Length: 297
Image (cartoon, rainbow, N blue to C red):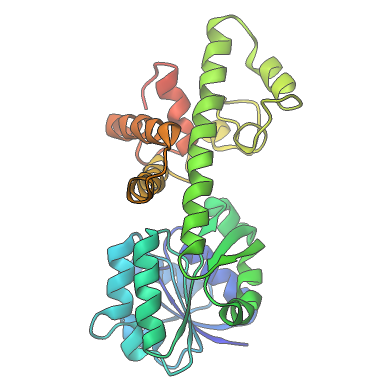
């Protein structure tokens, strides 16, 4: 059993924290939202009054925060994790942030004597609740080995992507693929309807042909085809369009800084910007099919 401080127990962090408790770990949680913190306590965690309270005495500190500036502050500010966690604690940041910030914070942590991993996840709220997340981990081999039992309690597929920042790089590239492929699948269903092809027949054909992909066969954006997909639940999010847009922007920032050519990634970002600006921010990202069909977000 490990003593874990968990900072950020929102839509993703909350179920991840509950799964750690279910695995037998002692968990002290902190979140700015009292309601989310209350849910974590109901799930078996102890409430901390602040970041320092969550990190003090912890063998492992896990963070799940919205953006790079929040991660930097949580670790480096006065009363933050680096100032509060005991020597030798393992630090695991599961936020999705830019590669440069991940490397910067890891370097600061390592200079202070801590092992730190960037370990963003894929799988959305459904995966967090079911403990089937995919973890893409950057950092040392030793840190990865230490973290593995905890990651196994929260996920199904655990990958060591390389040194610090590699986890964020893998997540960024993966979600660029996902955003592009979801738009392609959505455009195909929109076209099928226009030319009189039954969407279910398109699914039958493409799911066993060269158009097969995760966005089609696991997360089909056309309503009424896959019972468990958000499209069949009014596009209630597992993964919001706003979060997809965030990830596509991270990819474009990285492409600009590295000189990579990603024209489809850029166009996907522009389409998701339009969808979000039209009111689709809190809709599941597969809901972009509505815009492509000419429907309201």
